[in-house]
Image (cartoon, rainbow, N blue to C red; front, side, top):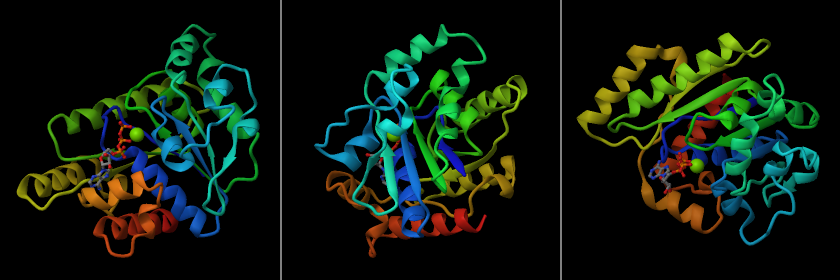
Length: 250
Ligand SMILES: Nc1ncnc2c1ncn2[C@@H]1O[C@H](COP(=O)(O)OP(=O)(O)OP(=O)(O)O)[C@@H](O)[C@H]1O
Ligand SMILES: [Mg+2]
């Protein structure tokens, strides 16, 4: 199964979710590949530290490398990564000029050649562009993280419009979507937000598991190149373990 973690909104937990979901799959014995499809390369930095990748997803999108050449193992068993680089932003612009019918299927074609993975998780940049189109054309499910702040609902609407356009306009593409509420705080604004999202999109399109706001364990895991779900004390780690269970049951 290929899952894209994607929304136009920045800083809503996409990378944290991609990372922990993938680690959860790997811990469950599923051979898992993380694709860092964001020029910010946050995921690559967290998982690879000082290790400099020779080839990245940018080279694949530029037609200069096969995806297999870019795969790097991580210290988590069963978990590999295809790293990213800042040049992905430049390639994104160049892809726009390529022939329709080829430009949007580059990632899908590349992933088709990787039969050995049970799970592929794609982390994305917070924008709707040719890269996100590629991720959507390649995936079976898009997970849309959201937080209760100003503009979040518009972020979901815009992201789903982009999804709908792709589903309607590009032949042979099908994916489902599910919204994940993250960084949830204990106040009325957040409680009302959850209720609105469930009412607007229906329970089948919103994860039951919600990720609570707890900054320190998330930051610490990032800085120490650790895996958040290894933390047995933090609520936010338990929330991610619950999410993994829900995703694997689903
Ligand atoms: N549940 C949480 N509670 C508190 N802080 C969190 C939580 N999840 C993520 N964060 C913090 O919020 C910030 C953004 O998280 P993350 O990088 O996962 O978001 P993102 O959507 O990938 O951002 P971007 O759009 O820039 O790629 C990070 O500093 C991270 O440590
Ligand atoms: Mg990110």
